[in-house]
Amino acid sequence: MIKKIIVANWKMNPKTKEGAQVLLEAIKANIKGAKDVEVVICPPAIWLADLKAGGSMKLGAQNCHWEVSGAFTGEISAGMIADAGGEYVILGHSERRQYLGETDEIINLKIKAALKAKLKPILCVGEIAGEEMNVAAERQLISGLAGLSVNQLKEVIITYEPVWAISNAGNRPCLPDEALSAGLFIRKTLTKLYSRFAADKAPVLYGGSVNDQNDLAYIAQSRLDGLLIGGASLEAEEFGRIVKEIEKNENA
Ligand code: PGA
Image 1 (spheres, rainbow, N blue to C red):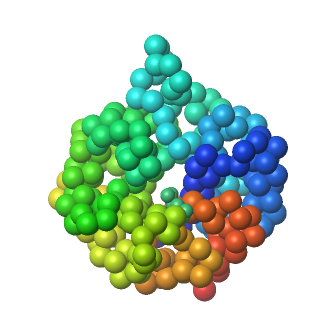
Image 2: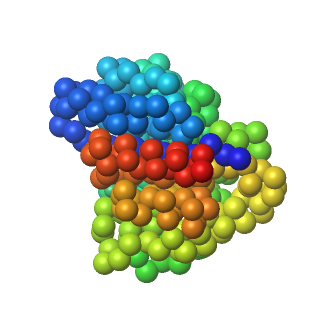
Image 3: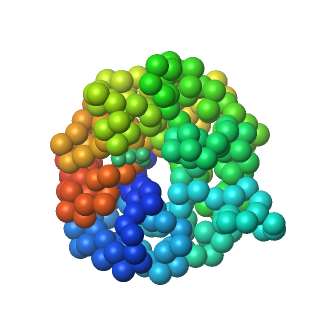
């Protein structure tokens, strides 16, 4: 069975390094003892080297460049993230696709760069409002994973994030049944691209307005392998409750 993974996407928060350190320590205190769940904290990359994870808590970044180094003003390479203590990197988040013009092709290059630097890419896929889930997810998976071997796929985590459900953006949440269908569709697509065996082994997470009220539904009813949490990951107590609840459910 795949160990459950809970990813905290802090986005461009909090405002200061001190705030980040306080939040990380508060999360640590609130998840104390939880060792059967992998917790990945993704702060703004500028603080990666200052934050100390440890135990079942790992660090990740929210983006990387596809080149190793060079004339790319303002960018950070996957190797630099690894050097600063990051082990994961979120790639293809809808906010980067939407506001920073990231295409599936760019995301594919970034995934390859992340793998070369021994980071685990967390690839986000999902439809915008009005788009069909399967059309968007299939396109993003085919292009995002293009050229990756089955061995490389083993390092990749896929997250289903319906864009209309992120940060309570839409007028309704994503139902656990919809997350279930998306998860099954993602595995079906991975089966076509690789094999049933490889698809079953790939962790598939859900993200979009997860909180301590709906977290278990996405895990239990949607049969997914973890959660990617934005807003609620900035609330140490709530985030801690989610991690503990998921672990309790695993050990029940
Ligand atoms: P949210 O963000 O939990 O605030 O909806 C999730 C994400 O965008 O990663």
